[in-house]
Length: 250
Image (cartoon, rainbow, N blue to C red):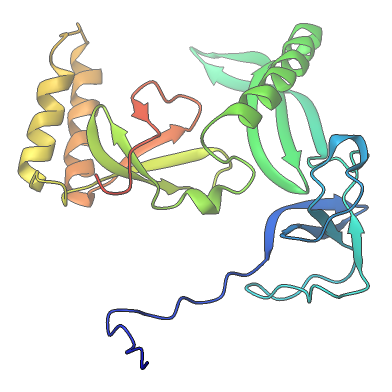
């Protein structure tokens, strides 16, 4: 009996059993950790049994090591997935105002994870500023690890679909760590004119009193945003207007 091939059947590409899940730093070098389907170790300290550290030079992007490589080692709980370096820098400043020299102080905090800057902020100087900076840095570590935005690999967030004040948009990361811009999406049923008209309608639902100078600045910013199709937002943690879980097909 001859069986005819189904003309609609297409050969599926083979599934790669080796999937990179994250990277770690050991001393000052990066190493990749992979999930290898079907290759198991003892599962030390409740670590997934299919997680393996490739203890050798990293391969070029897009390549995975052979499954029979001698460089595979079981991933262990004693390897921190994220290693932090947090610097505190204090200083004094001056400026001339109203015919006299005025003095101030500051504390600058830079947060680096796995060798990459991920966040920075400033506060007042002195003991009070230092104490506040240390406490805020601890709080931010927890926030960033739990946040939907990937602060540790922000490049992966470029083009991510979101809702901005309920309207379809996407994310564009900025050069400053932890900051983003918003790009309106005109492909979901609203033209450019309709998108911005709806945004203005939503923003004016609750009118707020503003001084004339501030209102003029906001109006100029709005015209610039409409012209460039880009909202220069800022801190990804200041996301009260963002719904991060927009579906790909919306």
